[in-house]
Length: 424
Image (cartoon, rainbow, N blue to C red):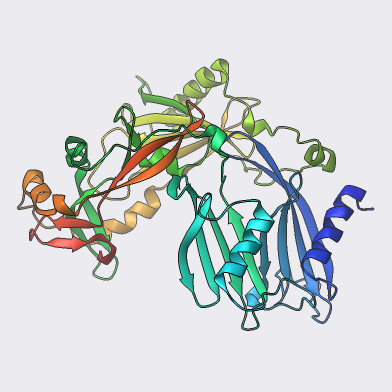
C-alpha cells in the first residue's frame, strides 16, 4: 500500500498537470546533495496514457508518457517531461498564447523566483524558452537553468528547473571594480598552448587559447574554472603520490552500487545523506594510503606521476580525483577517479579516461609552432573578455563577486592565424 504522504504528492501531480487520462506506472524516491551541502529528496513518477498499450517486458516510456519529479519537502516540481513532445493531458498546463510574459509569470508562480532578479532569458526559439540563473541580472556560477517547451497548441510538454537559485543572504555584497585592463597580467597568464583535435580532419592543431578562470573582485585571486564546474563540496589535497616499491598483487575491481534505497521516512524527515558528512581526518589519511596502494598495484611504474587533487563523497563512496603531475599539451587531460568504500576505506573500483584519449593517437600530429606566446597574446588581447559573475566559494560558503576571463578566439601556432575556437 502506498504511504499516504506519497499518495498526497501523486494526487497533487495528477491535478496540477491534468493527468485524468493517465495512470501511475512507476514511482520512486532518490536523494542528492547540493552545493550548500543540503540533502534534497525527490519523488520521481512515470505516468502512462490510458489509451496506449505497452508490452509487459518493455521498460521504455511510450509516446505521451509524463515523467515528473517533485521535491518532497518544498513540493516544487523539478522537471516535467512529456515523452516525444506529445501530451494527452485534458486539463494540463496551457497558455492562451505562447506569449513570453505569460510563461514567465507562470514560472515565477511555480518556482517562487523573480524574473530579472534570479533568472533571465538566455535563448528563445519556436515553442522553447531557455533561462539561466542570475543575481540581480549578474550571471552565477555554478549556473542554474530553467527550460520550458510547448506544443503547437501551446500546451506544456517540458518544464525543468536545475540549479540552486540562492537567496540574497548568502551573497557578499560589493561593487564590481574589475576590468580586463587592471588584471592584464593575470589574463596573459591564462593564454596556453594546447593541441585541439579536429575530428573531421583527424588532425591535431596547436592553438594558443585562453584557459577560463574567475578572478575575485576583492583581492584579485584566481578561482580555477574546473572547481566550479564540479558542483559539489570537496576536500583539497594536491599531493604527489610516490612509492619505492610496486605491489605485485593485482587490484580486484568490485561492482559499484549505483542506486541507493531511500525510505519514505528518510525523505519526509529530511534525513541528511551520508554524502553530506565532511570527510574526517582519519578518512583523509587512510584514503591517501589507499590511493597509493591502488596505484602501486595498477600503475606500478607511475611513482611520482600522479597528483591526488581532491576527495569528495558521492553516491555512498569516497571519490579520489587524480591528475597527471606532468601534463601534455592536449586540450583533454588524463584523469583518474578511484572509488573508496567509506566503511572499509579500501579501493573498490576506478575509472581512467586513458582509453578515450587514445583515440587521438591515430590523429595526424600537430605542426611545428612558429609563434611565441607573447606574440600570440598581442594578436588577440583585444578580443579577451571579462564578465562579472557571482561565484560560489566553498570555503566561505557564500557567493563572491568575480570577473570571468575568457576569449572565443585563439591563435593557430603553426600559421599564426586567428581562429574561432568553436570552429575547431
